[in-house]
Length: 215
Image (cartoon, rainbow, N blue to C red):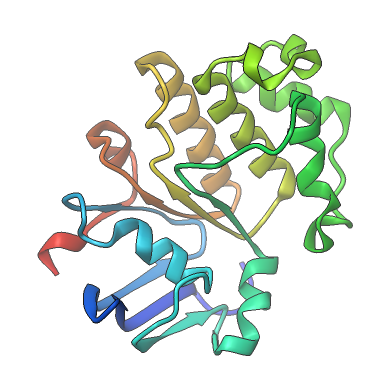
């Protein structure tokens, strides 16, 4: 571990859309190597929280501290550079699976990241994916396969902080178990995981559960 014990601290966070408050006075801390589930009723601001942490949604008030430094508007690049964010609804402007796998490594923050064939094979095997999907079009694979494939991408990116929005939503029970174990292994290797979820079984595997509805 390096730096602060807590990789992420959120203090008295408030977020509003059109004068409607969606997150009110939310505070939390995430330790390095910890896996935390954010739960709560629909409309309680769970997904908005993740977008606010990435700087995609402006704060009404409050502060975000990442790796010991307060994140002002001009400093969000530091957090984004060390964070992998997987939203629930992710569009694919690609035709082929291979393009989806390659595209994240073309971004400025990921150009120094290397993913070998052996690394892809290992992640695919652990996620129950056939290597043959690499040669298919996106419309030829299922939503569950796409979801698991994206977790392989996240593992290859090797970020310190991982934000997940409903990581098991598109999966059957067997695939959800594989993904949950895969995420736990990333956490055990030192990654910090913050996951929004309605999946009670997934939440039960986390180190802590924070119900945003009751705060």
